[in-house]
Image (tube, rainbow, N blue to C red; front, side):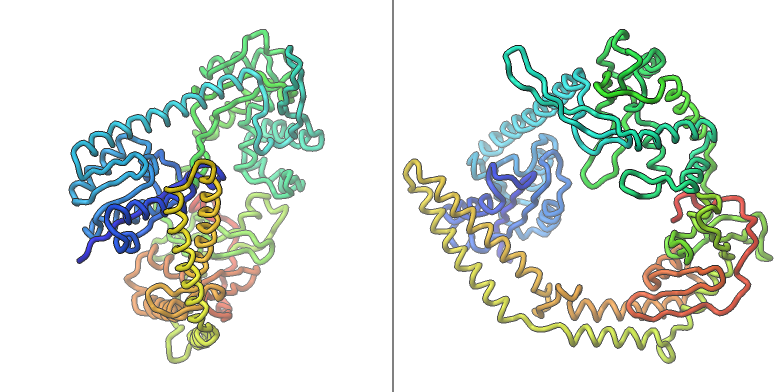
Length: 579
């Protein structure tokens, strides 16, 4: 098997600065052409990650490249610059060791490093040390800057908390220069809601009861949505509302926050600004940091909740957290996240009752989440007997056999309709590929010209390369969308899937119906739950009947009449996070 070169490129985000993804690739390809020949350059495999940091190796295309390298099909990995791979010395050292074991060279074009030689390996390690030093220095500068900003008590931007808006203020320095900054200003109609949330929480001393109170009285967020317990808790724990008074100072000092304010700055008027409260990672939910890591100062805005009141709220929240019920070990409900209330549209969640069936299984019911949260003030739909509903649904699904099922007939119709509607785009793709090839040749000539260009003309040539590369990038993306992976057929994206994919998905649905029929007695609860989610789009309970809407077709059926409406005597939630 002939080994090929790999080109890897990365950029943290799209900007007009630095080398673009396309330029990195072309320069790497030119390096391979000069040192190893045109055929090697044309055969090079490209992996590119745009919008990912070099701080770690958690990048999709990088992972894909390293997984493929285990098969021994690569001759070497070429990057434009060393830090395109990683700025972490530990990650980089491990990477070089892995590539060395796989007998794959690593080449950096900018630094002219090649692990094919001992000196190249040594110089690469030294360079990676400086890359990590640069990264850590930048992080340290950011922390220092944050500390300095905290001393000003300014609002640093982003979504303003409920009750406040942001306004620009202009000051004049001693040198006569204008200096702009942002500060929070009170929005009276929103702040009234915030103050009501604090006072009602201390009256009710429960997030659940406060949630019901806000639903019942029609309180809405600044975006017009219903308040959730998550949103309520975010307001109750945000120190921005706390008045900077003596109680606030004592509490913050006792929590050992990084406090950038003296006791006499707590003037009983202004509010608190807390920076560095959350840990933010791309693609993940924000996590609250320990208070010891908070950077706190007295803000320029007006505080509205007395320090003693804010502190009491935190104490009640902490007490409630310790009294939270434990999640039951067994959850046999099958329709969590599938069953919806036909009255308000919210999801219905399972709750355990005190009674048991003859088999010893606890009886559980499904009840509307909004009905529970609002204490029936916003929805009063009847609960449904969960054991009976789940069993009836499984029974009906197992009867969808191939001989008499309207559902499978609908599947076949849908499968045939989509397969017939997908047109052929072979000529269109051929024209796109020709245009890409012509552009590649133009870029190749421009790169060669760049090495001979006189001073002052480089920027003009680079701009042309950038423009041609962007055009090719768009054409390649369009080409990928039109091509069917691995089949040679084309023209699927605007229909949602390819002919082969459509056919396979419909066949899978039919197989899953048969699997549930054949193995219902031996499948675990989780396996039944997973199968139902691949067959059922949603189940709607209207208070008397359950309407089942299936995936892959317009087919809907109603469960046979059963005494599934239950007396509302449930007590224990089966799962707190069921939706």
